[in-house]
Length: 150
Image (cartoon, rainbow, N blue to C red; front, side, top):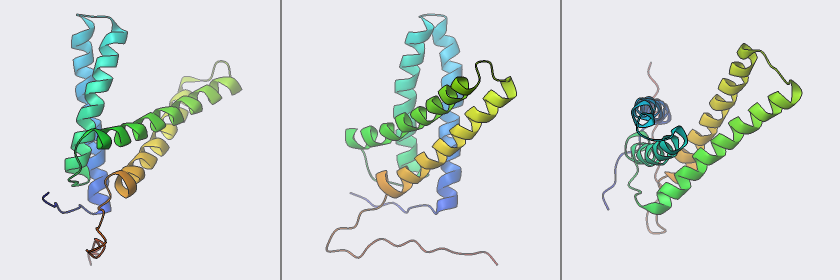
């Protein structure tokens, strides 16, 4: 197994946002194309599965420079996406429980805030748990050097 260099936290975060955002934009374009050929629910389910698998691979290889591959990595990474979905769903359900007809700006503010919190939580979980470099008992732990620009 070849080892790749782990990008620093800021580079990882930027890559995480670009990869995830890129897959989301691509998914929205493909969704429109598929919707013309099948039901919206089926198209969305297909796009969600394929988009999640693609994002998992991109995050593994690009965002976190990980050597992890296979179904276990996909299951762990997908679990973080599911947890993020739960966070945004609970936030929106809570808002609609507190206010039957919230203003559009309030609804967007709650959704975007929950998405940001969930995304940050997902990033931290992926970086620190799912794609963290594991050292064997015979090797010293992998340490990253932090370089501060003057």
